[in-house]
Image 1 (cartoon, rainbow, N blue to C red):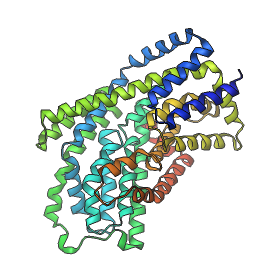
Image 2: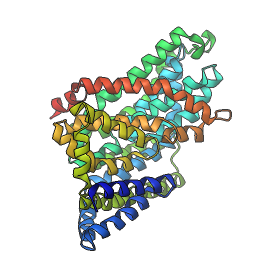
Image 3: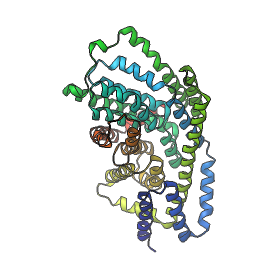
Image 4: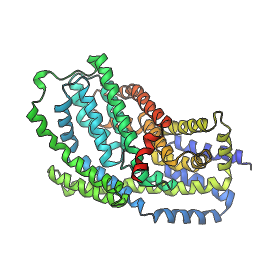
Amino acid sequence: MSPEILTALFFGSLLLFVFLGVPLAFVLGGVSAIFLYFTWGVDGFYMVSSRVWSTMNSFTLISVPLFVLMALILERTGLAQALYRMMHLWMGGLRGGLAIGTVIICTVFAAMVGISGAAVVAMATVALPAMIERGYDKKMALGCINAGGGLGILIPPSVVMIIYSMNTGVSVGDLFAAGIVPGVLLAVLVGLYIAVRCFIQPQLGPALAKSERASWPEKFASVKAVTLPVMIVAMVLGSILSGIATPTEAAAIGVLGALISAVVHGTFRFSMLHEAVVRTLGISAMIMWIFIGAHVFSTAYSAMGAQELIEGLVMHIPGGALGALVVMLGIVFLMGMFLDPIGIMLITLPVFMPIVNHFGFDPVWFGILFIIMMEVGYMTPPFGFNLFYLKGAAPDGVTMGDIYQSVVPYVLVILFGLTLIALIPSLALWLPGVLS
């Protein structure tokens, strides 16, 4: 059978079962195993087992459950409430100040936990009711949480970056360093959008009444809320970027920092720790099964010769390197509406990386663009993950329609930021170059 027909059948089967709601690990592993058997026979499974064994022996992989555990502990410490109170006191007197402060808190959370859902759930629980109560436009409030929460997979430490590194061979440290400036840039752009929009239309984000504004002693007293976040960021990110610790060792340090935070806030309970550990086990097991399915997928994909076919098709896209980049990012954008980032990476990277190498793209720079586009996918209907995190934690009266409508301007802002990074690669590559 020709590679063209095999490719159509292979990817058609994958998409069919994904849209039918079959778990991604079983889709990748099951469909790929069938195609692998009929192309290479039983011998193909020996290669799969060899690849899986090599991946599971990776020391870096241990950092994934550790960062997940750190995030789950921090969700329960009361840190989000303390940070929001500080931002409320400092930013509430500005038009749109509570929304801008929410984006800042999401950025801080991103630098602590490495996943998207933690900041979205925390801010939907704490900040969203406060903004709505104070007359903020519902779509403005929902959109800032959606956009800010997405930074969790871009600003290091990022679980997604670790998995990207494992699949491409790119240095985790370089990726972490490359994500800092783009992450801050996107946060600033979102904050500027809110500020400009609320300056033009004050009713969207009214400033607090003078009677509700804090005194300077209250403001300075609230600054202690950032002490623990700064400590955790310094412990985790500083140890990696300075070369003192590997990502896995830094993740273990981060878990220690999260536990200290829980003790300081008086929220540490053994029942809380038990629940966080059990949830970490479930999430990590899901990730590992997807990994195994992805190895079967990549082996079957190679066996069919489909990779050469798709590479050839992409090479003939009008626009050369730019056209290929747009198509690859467009595919990630569409997949992000339906699949989780780990699944997207494990499906697409075996196809994309030879193309990236062919056109001479810097793999670190491409990785940042790739992750930003997955961040956009997290934000967009119909099945972007942040949308459902928001709906699950939002107060009564917030509909899925409200959440869908809030997305558009923030997606445009993020895409504008992505365009800047694509046109000015040094925004992503300057800091890794300085630290190397």
